[in-house]
Structures are given as structure tokens and as C-alpha cells.
Image 1: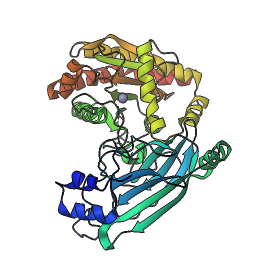
Image 2 (image 1 turned 135 degrees about the vertical axis):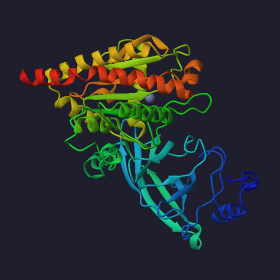
Image 3 (image 1 turned 90 degrees about the vertical axis):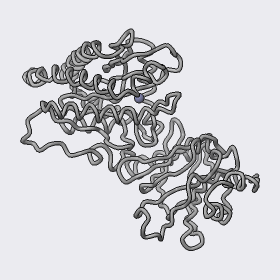
Image 4 (image 1 turned 180 degrees about the horizontal axis):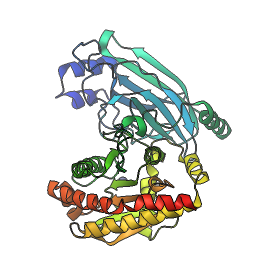
Length: 437
Ligand SMILES: [Zn+2]
């Protein structure tokens, strides 16, 4: 099952120490399982005082079916604590970890074995990481065992999964919901972003939301473009432009390559009493290859058209991939919705979106139908006017070229900044009107 010859093929040109370690660990990639090439980089020496402090580095992941179940073995520079919990619909097991530096080859986790269909991993908020496991059959984590390797060579973390019947898994998911660590990332939006200016600063706060992040890359372009990087770069440019003008305060829902859940992005804007919320994206629409240009979206229960519905469905899927049980957050938001407030917010959101389209029109290639609406979870704040801007589509050559251009980004940021400033004076009046009723 594990052709030893692969070691030599995979590691022939690698660092000699790595090869020795690979052989010592007996940790040979079986092609087709957990991706090709288990080691992406040499194990850092945990005892090396010159090394990066404390953060474990995981350099190997092997998934295999055993006689008694399914086994995931990680090779880590240090022992790892893993707290599992279960989620249903679809069936998933989530392992909460301390912050881990995953140095694993591309495509790791895409191929399953045993009860595991696939798995994803990455940073999950500040100081925490997570492995989300998609199950092909109900299962639980039977054990997590850290085995130290010779002296400072690292640790193997062996996680054994066993099948459960449906009823037992359902129960486990129920217990997980009640007792497991909160599915909300501990260090999400509120802690992971800069503290807004002191209260005496009366300027309105604009929250800019760079889409995706952490183990959620968002869309991918044909030339290696990654949406989470594009959105963060653009959000930073836009924030700088707004700060330069000086009329508003600015906060970002994330300012690094970190995962922040959709409800946490909304919560952050609400907690900070934001005057406006602008979510930045750049997706692909594989089913509509000729779709191009910037599009501005607002929230609606019923999508304005089929493409808008598809975009919203893709953006909302993020939390499911991160192992979040988003259904409950939804209800929580709905239950506190005040009808009047929501109506006011909707009017302001649509007015803001119209202004955005108008401002972008002078500088940017717009989608043929640039103002659309759909049920985006990230636009659900009942009291913060919100819009989502798809800067362009990574599936379009013309849009990719635009997104790669610094000049285009700066021009577009100026246009959006103008639209933001144009809409803000309406905010206090509308809020007062809503309260008076
Ligand atoms: Zn997106």
C-alpha cells in the first residue's frame, strides 16, 4: 500500500535531513491519499532556540483506512491538543487546535479514505486552527494520540475515527452543540481587528469586509489568483483612501489571512455601531463564462436573478465549509429584527448601492446588470446599511487584468470612497426617523 520507492522519488532533490526524517518516521505518502507528497518542508527543530517560538508546524498528513476504522496521522513539530465536535447536515467532524502553521502540499485532504470524504485545515481566528472533516458515513473521534519521535524530531498525532450509527451520531452532534467549544472563533472579528478610534471621535465608522480568508480561499483564477488575497489587498487600499480623506473612521473585519465567519463579520459591524458595511469580493461564475464587470449587491429574500442567487449561494457556503452551524445564527438574527429598522436599513442600503454603481460607472467596467440583490448572509445586519461589491470575476480575462492593476485598484477605491462619503450624511437623519416612530 505504501510503495517505499516513492520516498526516493518525492524526496530525491530535497534536503538530506528531510529525507532521513521521512524514513525515520516511516511516513511515506501513498499517492492518491492525502495528496501527493506528504512533506512540504522540513520539520523545524522544536528545540532550536533560533526557531519560531511555540507555534506548531504540521508538515505531514496521511489518511488511511485501517482494520478498525479510519486513521489520520499528522506529523507536527510539537504535540497537539485536538478538541473534536460533530455537526450534521452535512455530517462533519471538526477538530479545534491551537494555532498551527500548516505546511502541507497543495491538494492535501481532497482525497478521502474510509469514513472520511475529504478534509480542510487552516487558521480559524486569532490563535486557533481547525481541521474540518467531511464524512461519508457517521463517525466519531475514538482517540487522539501524540507520539514523540526520537528526541527533537517532532511528534506524530494519530487520530482514529470509528463508525457510528445514525442515531448515535445525531446524539453526538446534539452534545457537541451543548458542550463543545463554541463554534464561534474565539479570536474572530472583535479581537482580530484593530480597535476603532476612541469614543470621542464622532466621525461615522465604515466597516470594510474583505471576503474569505484563512482556510477559505474563495474563488481561484486561472493564473493562480486567489480571491481572499485580492479582497484583502483591495480593502486595504480602500481603507487607506478613506483614511487619507479623513471624513470617516475605518475598520476591517480582518486585516490578515484569517478566517472570520459570516455571522461574526455582521456582528462586528453591529457591535461597533457602524454607519456602513461594505463587503468586497471577486468571484468566479463557472456556469456563465462570459459574465464580467463589477456588480453591487444588496440583501433580498428573493434574488433579483439566477446569477445573483448563484453568487449568494456560493458566498454563503463559506461557513459550512468552515464547520460552522450557521442555521442557528440565522434564527438569532431574524428574531431580533425590527421591521421598521430593517425597512430603513434596506432603503439606505439600496440608496448606497445605487450610489456605488453610479460612482463606479465612471471608472470601472460594470456588469451588464450592475445592481442586483440576493440573500447574502453577510448583508443581514438589521441596523447597518450594507452592500457587497463583486469587483469583477476571476473567470473573466478582462477582469483578472483589471484586478491585477494597482492603478485600477486605486481608481476603483477612490470611486467607492466617494460613494461612501456621499451616502453618509443620510445616516443620522434616517436613524432618528426610525427611532421617532
Ligand atoms: Zn467571495
